[in-house]
Picture 1 (tube, rainbow, N blue to C red):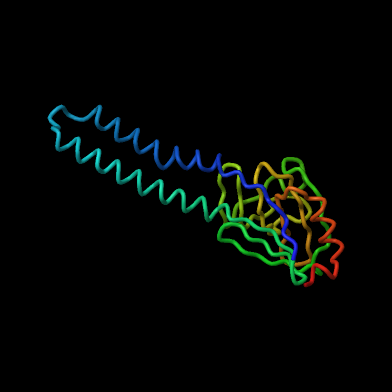
Picture 2: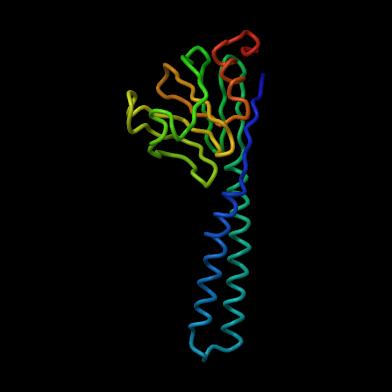
Length: 187
């Protein structure tokens, strides 16, 4: 078994989620308190403060859980199969179906720049799940994406029903292993 590391930097996703799920509701509550009638007494303030505290506690817990699930990533070669785990998505690619593997730049590669989201998790700096190509010679073909913005991308072409786009620290090493299909990858 050989595990290929994938650098996951959830800070951008954390800050985006924190801003959306925590700072925005606090701003709304603050605006309501500011614009609210002066008739509200200490009981109104206590109720709003308690609601905001409970809301924050629940949101912070849920956000931590979502980010934990979203960033559990692993790319493993074992048993003649490429095992991809990203968040709640798990996919297997038999090594004999791999046709090609090349390092690509996501913004310039033909057919990879305009992927249409189908099912997955898309956070700032991280995406995992199923996408579909809109243009190019293989328009309509599905692509399983497991990538972060910080990682170089490896485009794996298969003769299976989908291709794979991976963000790994060493794309050349993984491409070599995939194309070689060595006996030590079939343990």
